[in-house]
Image (cartoon, rainbow, N blue to C red; front, side):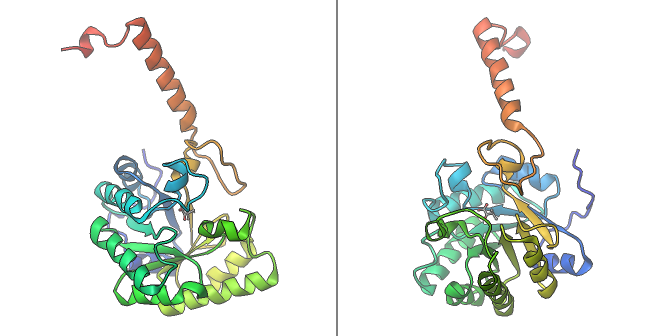
Length: 273
Ligand code: KIV
């Protein structure tokens, strides 16, 4: 049974997320990359599904998010859209699909919207990619910003440690967040930054701030589904709360299946034609 207390079956839109912030209603967001899991988390009442480029890690087994391609993101987004009725579906623009120039960025965003039927895109970065975000917004495509730890820039940072602990970086993050709101982004993800800084940003901005490793003072939370369900066991940052141990559940089920096949117990007569 779902533990969701919101019995509101109305489709979630970018506008509705802003209304939720105004009402002080927290926003729940999880990643999904395929039809079956999108259907489950949408049915449980999740507000936003992110087709994250973390698919590069948890689906394809890459060390970083950099290798995933636009075609692969569109494949995942199409599958998620087929399993989703209520949640707002946001798709990450992958590394290399928007950093070149704003024309290329717009072409990538249009491909995602046209081919997957998703409802918004997410882009990592602030002032450096302003022109690309503005061009995409001008085309009527909603954009979710992403500041703080931006995994597509891991080779520049050299570490996945907490960002914006220093005043200079914190000031730039606040400036970038204000700019993203001013140009028309509908929400911003803040990843792995001090809770106090995230709270300050959420209080100052009128658009929703969704945190991951950014404390409880923001307007919503996002986690990678494979991490919070315990499918991906090799990642245990402090901010991650595990709600299930699906790796053990799957390991146990597969073990019993193997035993039954080897012993001849499966299939039984009632499982045969
Ligand atoms: O790709 C992803 O899963 C993300 C979340 C960590 C916010 O960007």
